Length: 242
Image (cartoon, one colour):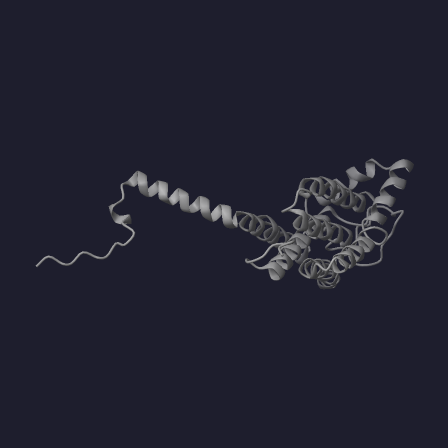
């Protein structure tokens, strides 16, 4: 007795190999077109930074010196001069209390006045949460600041991760994610990326942070901003969707 054939409503089992591969490519292309941006954000904004932060945190927790920290600090110190001092002190001020913090508040208030509640919620969670997370992480790791020379802008709190790096990077991520589906995404990205790098460099130049503190701040900012984005917008809506 011949067993009955199993149903094959799609006819996939009878497709030639080339047709099956073509169908698979089409399905993958459709998935990428629909969800490619979010998949990329998961990898670039969440998975890769989480791995980087975990690697750095493990070294700091075990009090292991990172090979690149001291050489980069000394290299930054070799660039010191009166002009550089004035410029990078101004950059570091703009990177937190006199620039980033007011910009955070203005952004959330502007979005609320514009009646963009989801966007304002995302910005508020990402920006305020980043600041609280930074304070808690500093207390958890309690890493002392570098002491290779006397800084012209000394700090008294713990070092890991850098609050300036984390705060400026979180603001940058929020602006880029809000602008990504608009015609302003590349101008915003080209504006905020150099600022974030300059703020991070200023902290190393002033001798108040190890380079690993900066990298950890950037990584933590990325993870928190991306997580906040997914928490607010999930997978069914995007910024500026009415």
